[in-house]
Every structure is written in C-alpha cells, then in structure tokens.
Image 1 (cartoon, rainbow, N blue to C red):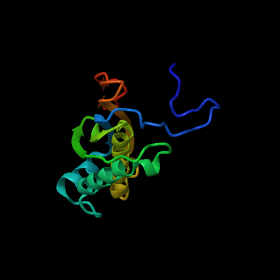
Image 2: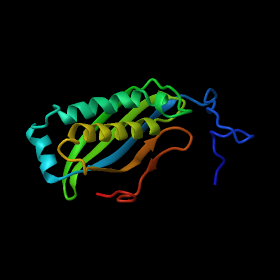
Image 3: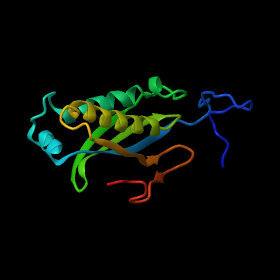
Length: 165
C-alpha cells in the first residue's frame, strides 16, 4: 500500500502541499443511485411533487456542493472549478434515479471529491424533497467513474463493478 499523502511523519493529519505540482486540466465523473417506489418516480416524471421541481433543485444543490467541498471535507483544497454538471437518468429496473456529476478544473489537485460530493448532495436533496411520499428510498452506489489529469493519469471504473443498479 502506498504512503497516505494526508498523514505526516508523526501520523498527524495534514493538508497536502500542492504548490510544486504543475497546473493541468483535471476532470472527475461520479455516480450514485436513489432507489424508490414506482409511484414516487411517477411523481417526479409528472411534476406532481409537493415541494416543486425535484431534479432542478437537486441539480443546483449538487453544483453548489461541488463548489463548497473544501468546506465539508477536511483537508480538501478550495478550487476554482471551471465546470460542474449534474444529470439524472430514470431507471425502471431497479426503479429510481441514476445521478451523475462531472467536475472540471485547471489546477494542481484533482476534483474527485468535488464530483463525489456533488452526487451525494444531489441524492440527499432528492430524498429530502420526496421523503413525504416515500421514506423507504435508498441512496447507494456512490462511486468515482472516471478521473483524468494529474500525475496518476486516467482512471476508469470497471463496467458494473460496485454498482447496484
């Protein structure tokens, strides 16, 4: 196992010094899934939810979360994000919504945590907006699908690996 970069010689947590790293274009794509009853998904599709447009609200929440990841996750660097996109795809089997987020930056550190945070908060927002109709919803399968840039290069998750749906 490689040495953890967020731990110093004494075993203490620290923020990694990225000042010597080259600036490069870095991207990350993450996904998650909100499982729900078919009737709950129908509420979204028909626009009949009591709290308003679920997907528009979850999209904004995910984008905002990507921009504020450094405030939520200790030791993350504040980044000048150049792109944050959150998308949704309905699923019938299993029933629910697949949530994806793509984040991009030109910088000295990656945006994996920003993409994962965007997906997580978008999923939580979906749950919050629909909980009156379906408290049995399940949030799961949050994972990194792809990252590019930086010293470690490109990573792509294996098809189907770790994914529930």
